[in-house]
Image (cartoon, rainbow, N blue to C red; front, side, top):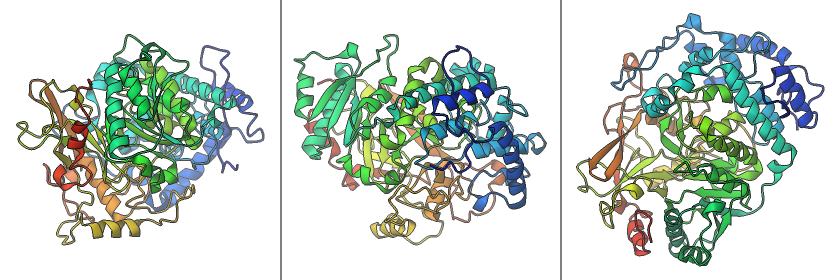
Length: 621
């Protein structure tokens, strides 16, 4: 295929334990990847020319339709520091005189997505030549970690209230001592591994058909999978085949009651090949990527053992955004800090977006097996990469960004599921509520409920309400009822062309409700303009949900909960004036709603059905 001006593919061999120079990296990866682009010009010559042309374009015309980075406008506009009362305060944004426009342009160009059908070798080429980890012999010199962090403040200055302070504190020394030499070493190591597997044909071994994949080793986690299977088969009549992966050391006895029932419910227990359990760790996250890679299906719905759908999820394989991008991820409560060294390894600018919650993954391996293999390598090297990711959840997102991929997101931001009113002194969220592409509840991920002390939750006091953003945030003084069925259908049909379900990559097209991807929300400004264009309803969502703030609290012994509040996400000295979208920036819960499960046809019978099938919150049968 045509590379559309991509830099030459790059790769390297594993003959040396030390990271190769950029020049050797480029020449040797060409050999590994079938001598790709032998006639292409040296990227070390191409980059300065590309930068000069891009700088002229930026200064003269700005980015096309304002959809990409706001380099041009931000360089000459002050970027105030937020004054929220959450320690520690973020670093001040860099003054314009410290910013290098050429560096900014390089970083923005390197951060752009590649078309869906781009080959793995071309993706590796783009990654290897991206700023931050190219090596010290780059013509003109590699940018420093400090330069990259200064650039990242442009897009992520307001990320700090939602990033994991605990992760940063635990790995403070690693973050502080990180430099571009280390970024080059770890980037190069990952490129080598994926290039080797691509050369062996493993990227094309994606299987066929569709299925559900679980991971469960001990009896408790296996019992939770059985609860989910009971709901899928006995309540929803789902016929999707299922497999449950485990480490060799966790193989259950053949006469296990759980194994027998799992088989009766149409699930096969599978021993993961080529991996072992790390007995020093409570959780072994790398099994998740291995299970997705090794399962026989091309299209996979992965589910954590404590995650139960609200209906047969098979229809999601036909969802518009999934069919367009062939991958769908769901959001978490947190964001990635601008000074996290992972951005240098990936060679992309910091993205002001919600991190990934990996309790559910929808993936087409024909298009994304390379990202799954890359995720597998990163998870197997967890002692290093978990310094930058809180567990496995964001490893998949980082792999997608490294390979310049994009993914679909649900039609509504994550909700917080809680017991009925009166169960505790305050709103006690024990469940992550995840939604489908149209904003309807789809996954009940009870990750905190399963940890509650025995007897604190039971039937009638497990679920009853959800705190969430309304599906459509009404503008001030808008008389239209925003959540009516008629209004929702009108917005859906006007926002997208339902016939456009092929694999075309029109990143400049304005899409809307029912077909939202990550770039339509990432790096949103106060008017909802993000990395990709979107209709007004999605823009209002993008601008508003930046103000969601999650926090933990323990109401009573044995019951620790999560709750959310709404903070005005705008810098303090830019809070004057009305929004052109009519956004209500009032702090507190004014932009959120508490939705009773009794009013939702997908949820009102969920708890009764689940407990009726023998559910025990802790997982014991």
